[in-house]
Amino acid sequence: MTLKRLWNQLPFFAWLVLLWMLLWGQFTWLAAVSGVVVAVVVTRLFRLPPADLTGRVSLFWLLIFGLQFIWEVILGALQVAWQAVGPGTPSAAIVKAPLRVDDDLIMTHVAVATSLVPGTTVIEADRARRVLYLHAIGVRTDADLDAVRRHALTWEKRIVRAVGSRAELRTCRAGDAPYIERRSAESGSEAR
Image (cartoon, rainbow, N blue to C red; front, top):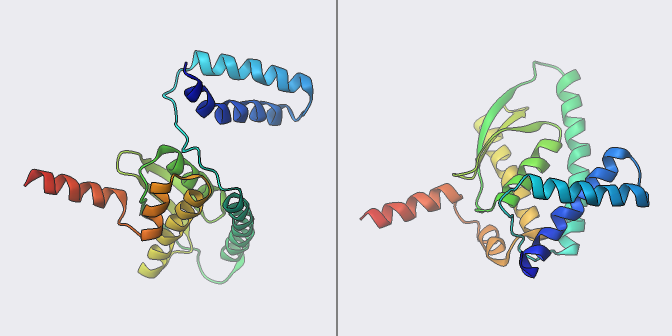
């Protein structure tokens, strides 16, 4: 294993150790050492394709993301509570939300952030086409559907600002078409 690959996998290894310590509810040396042992066994026993990190982390945008996430969780909880006790019957819809960036980690982060905010949850992820299918409550009109799609793209942009590559950041800032549309256009031009 090369030093660069080892360096790229270090955050995932550290995450496994932290997860182990969280599962045991202990932040002790024993939990850390046993977490390292478990992380080594898991990473050697279950061989997964390496997920390459961009190497770019913006601590400022990561902090902003964290604050926005906390705010969205609070706001989402209040909206769900109002849907439950407010007048009328709560409405819901399945919303197709195509993403712009072609990256497994970014797609995963968007799916997790979207699902953790009350009111929406990811019910399917189409990895090949970079599309998330969301179950969202409070959707009554086409404008509400568009708002849910835009919100997924907002999460994508927030995450890319925090941990995405410079190319992914340019894609989000430029407001490029979703990945599936760009891929279709490229394959259509190659067929001619």
